[in-house]
Each structure stands twice: as C-alpha cells, then as structure tokens.
Picture 1 (cartoon, rainbow, N blue to C red):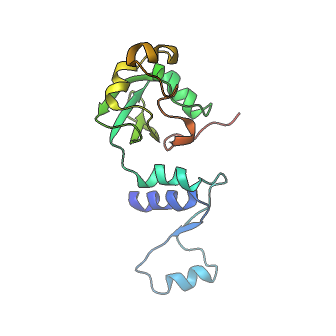
Picture 2 (picture 1 turned 90 degrees about the horizontal axis):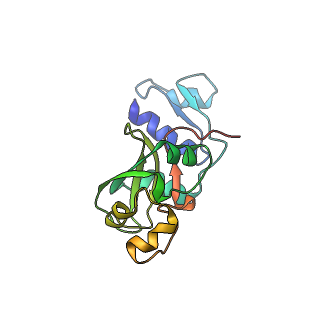
Length: 162
C-alpha cells in the first residue's frame, strides 16, 4: 500500500487524479468509468509541480543528506526560502556540486530534496556559517545558498501558508 500511495502522490503532484482500486475485481475499470464508487480517489494537488521540480523530487536519487537545524526547517517549510549554510548541522555522504541531496531534520524526517551549489567537502567546511563567511573559508563564493529555492522541492511536511 505504501508504494501505491507514493505513486498517487507522484501523479497528483502534476495535476492528474488517481484511483486506487482492487485490481483482481472483475470489470473494475468499467465500473469506475461508469461512476461507481470503487477504491480510493486521490484528487490532483492545487499547486502543480513544475516538470523540473517533479524531476528533482521523484526522479533523482539523493547522493547524500544535509541535516538541518530547526531554523532552516522553518525557513524551508514555512517561508519558502533557500537553504543557507548557517542552517546545516551535518553532512552525510559524498557528492559534487549540482548533485541531488535529501534535506532532513535532526530526527531524520525527510523535508526536501534539492540540487546543491557546493560539494560535500565544501559544505562541511562552511556548515553553520553565515554567507558572508563563505569566501574567507573556501577562497571562493559562487553562491550565497547551498541550495537555491528554485532547485529545491519540499517533499516532507506540507508547507504552511500565511
């Protein structure tokens, strides 16, 4: 059932309704098409994911994890912000700039997936720092954000609206 619900989440995120129904029941498809209430209907989400964000959320496999503090969690989930180095408490795995990573809270709950602007080694050196300190530590600063919000998809808790 977990895989069926995951599939429903994927299709509804791009605006397609989905019904999970008993596949062994005879004429189940014709009964559904006739309007009989069979199975569970999942309605499309009102805010459709762009194809790029769908690709990040459901196609790419994370090559590592970034563990976030509560402030970064709130900034991502409630304020729709980018991920800055100051909100990262730990890095797991080895990955390069542009690779997909999972963003998790301290308990390991998946919050988001995104494409990083820095390698795992560089993020380990700047985690917890302000963006103004990146250049002095790395000797370069191509980006303020570890993950820009345009390359980030919230996959865990539903973002609260104001």
